[in-house]
Figure 1: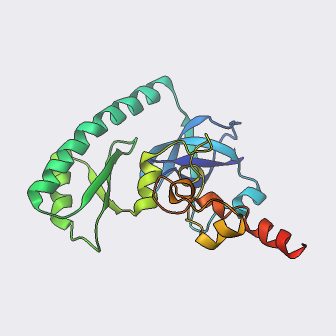
Figure 2: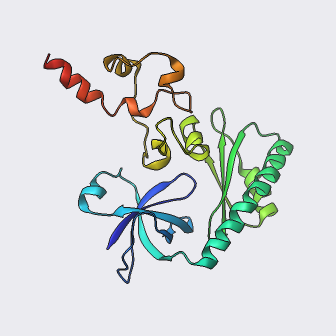
Figure 3: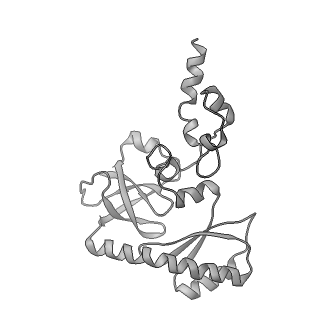
Length: 220
């Protein structure tokens, strides 16, 4: 049986199977195999053909290694607790190197062999020497990931104004096109504070009901 699982700090989605056909439920924490190594994942639902069709192309497809054990949870907490110290040290090294970038977050992959550095910068950055410095400092493989403002919110924000997980951190892989015209069609207040998300851009949810409003207006 296959399941849709989200994993990693960016809450990436993938389709994973288990060799022994174990039954998993929504919210079960599991260890999955991904191109980055072994990672902690959370089961979202069964990967039916209908659900897989809703995923964007290029999703990860691999296997569930096991259900998380008590020792796995302990190891996960240790890595997470060490991330703040690594981030502070990483920030120092970036400043000393003179590279102009904004460090957003450091993620230590569960398997322990990879450190992912999320950053923002204007344009492209030559970070080859920085990677060597960080790899020597932490004795792990270092992966640099340049992100935008919406991805930053995905990493740093959990709950939206609606009281539920923000969509970008829950299931969205690509940001939908959202325009001010959509807010006008729905007769939503144009107060920037009320129609903007934590990222400062128009809320993604304005896109969800837009087509319905357009169709409704045609029937009047």
